[in-house]
Length: 302
Image (cartoon, rainbow, N blue to C red; front, side, top):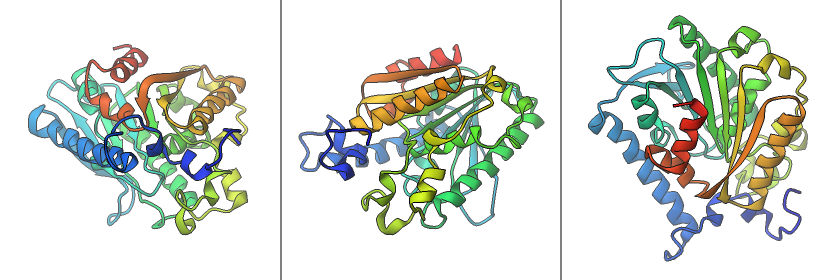
């Protein structure tokens, strides 16, 4: 157990209960979620309506589902500009690409092309199938980069997206040493990396829509994976972020995952972002001068 003092495990695994914002509202945890949905949708719409940013729509999978990628750029973006890839969260069962574009503006204005991934949600797929879907996406994004002669790629995943992003370390046949040399950073934001406690929690996994059991929860927990090839990732910096106003369980999952990566030999840093919760750490990436945007700029050396 990541929080030895916990008396309500279901509450500890639900990030919206731990915000200090919206305490004047009747139900603060619902208010923070509603605010996130409304604000991020607006931020996404403003990119093309007000900021002169363009978007290309692609598919990396089936024709009638959510296996889509939006690539954002402006008139000064070259075909081979550095690529930043973002994977959204939502406990593998909520949110979509319209809630996932907050950080696009500041990065595009600084010379990056930004690819935002969407994916099928559980229970349309099981989490096991979703991880394979993400693996297919990885192949697509590397081929996309190779066709454009892009030699610098950064990946970030938030919450469940952070968990999925770890799959990049678990697909050696696909993420070859040559491809690893193009990856400059992996940024894990407020992720969940150990599924052994959460898979049986009804509010997190209602009616087992993730399609898990105890054995699959172990197999799909990046915190438990055996990492043996860190030397081939010497071009990549690993950044594990947690938000101050999250549960101790979430913070400790990030801290322990960071330690696992460091112990395996990956160049890893852990950062507890002061003043943020699970939601505004993404919301504020849209502001060039916010603490989280400046931290990302420091990682990217902008």
